[in-house]
Image 1 (tube, rainbow, N blue to C red):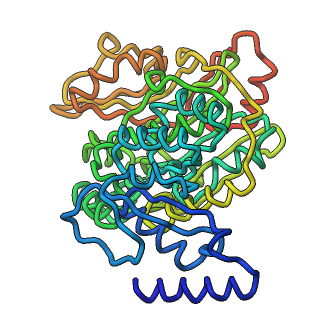
Image 2: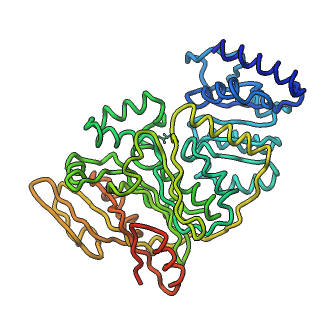
Length: 438
Ligand code: HSE
């Protein structure tokens, strides 16, 4: 680390000599959190971007943890940075969503721009944060909260700003993708694969957020906001994770030459935007089939662009730090508000085909399938495959989860088109794996 900082000084001196930069032109940053992502951020700025930005101080919660050496002053109280008038930007890389919210709101009120990696904080307080941003005329950026190093939020705000998007689909959680890759490609055990993901710094400090699908759930809300200007109610976004996966489910997928991936979908309907996050059966012809390990992917479909995919590392210290630096870059150019301001749709607009496994017999009495396509039962392995109304699936989720059932989407779903036939013809044309239902 010392070598890195020597390098920083060399670069700073070079910058002063070459471009006439001096300390007084530098933007001062207060960094809250010096864990996996915070350390990556310090490393990035020290090596690459230190010309215009200087980390004036780092705030951490505990003084009993060994951390890498740094010449940057360490504080044990974040107020030291939030109340410091010489600091221009607060960068947050902490897990605690409520603490992150308090720091972010106070920093905005104190006239600072805020960059955060905390998706739970932004997803659960989006409305208040947007209002505060307007009121204070400061910026809150959260590129690092969605898909790690892929600059999707900034691209939605700039490049795709006016694109009439017809669907977004993604792999947004690096940890579960890593675990599923290890299970399917290397036949590794779920727990061992999860421990590896934790060791590599992909998982949240509380990895249940990853494996239950909650992490991808928060990210989907943020993605929907940037893509469609809609503030979806989290309770209306169905999510189910991979923590109930059983070896029977893996065998079911393998026997059909498929893999399982945790996939969020954001779908405009004639009534508004609907989103859901489910494990999906993915077939070899789908490009998501080979998105492996901690890689994330975002697929956009739009009237003008057709279909595009962005692929990159979605978790880990340096890729996430790169997204924080991306936000610093954006602060220099100050992007505008969304062009779109769509409304939330009713999840009952979507009928989704799912495989549901239980250890007891399943029937249409317990699971309100609209139609059942396939079923199986033996002593302890029972499954049904069929279409179900997404709203009914949301209502059923606590029951399913409490019984440790598995829920996997086949990738087929239907949108209730009602009168908006033209829009849905376009949608059906642009998207794969979905059928119009008139
Ligand atoms: N735990 C997250 C993931 C980190 O695995 O994707 C990046 O948001």
